[in-house]
Length: 263
Ligand SMILES: C[S@@+](CC[C@H](N)C(=O)[O-])C[C@H]1O[C@@H](n2cnc3c(N)ncnc32)[C@H](O)[C@@H]1O
Image (cartoon, rainbow, N blue to C red; front, side, top):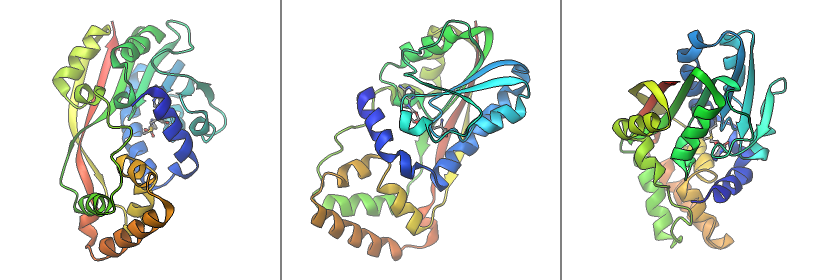
């Protein structure tokens, strides 16, 4: 998937992005922010790929005196960020910022979106002061998810074409603690600490269906169906999902919490 395709996807879903899923992600972003807390008291903190800015207020609250700035590729997402914070539209792989301007850089749930991962990590290092803090959260493993399996099967049965924007290779690195550590060290980071932690999200059937129509590979697949077929597909999915018990909707697995220091 190209960066332009990612931008277009997020621009399309921006108005419906807020919700229980975004809030679950933000919970991890805030927990990551807490781990950086001792590193910054004043100075500038950047969240790269901040989306609607659900982590920015927490960053400001735990770092009183710091200037918190949200950076995102997608202007439509960044516009949703709360007022009172710096906002910069920009690509994490070519940041429109000077060198050594930040004391901390956070990247929750964004590294796996970057085709040029090594370049982006070097950019994060470049904008940090020496000794500055870096933090990221990325996807690792996924547990079986019965509701998603039903959703995929129904979409297959309705003949939806393949995902036009399949997952990018950088996910192979960002989901693997060994490879991620090597990538960070190559970009000029030291004191790399990576921990594998649990992720859990339990939407209702209604929330699952609403979210699944706007985010992810299956959303991109059903969008390619003609309207009547798409409506039929959604009706079957809704009916089948309504027969599952609530545990079938639990999405769980592991995420990698990463912290490092600019050498
Ligand atoms: C899953 S959202 C995460 C939002 C936020 N960090 C959070 O955890 O709540 C991913 C965000 O990364 C942004 N993004 C994707 N590729 C990017 C890039 N190359 N540079 C900057 N932002 C990017 C998207 O526009 C989107 O807003």
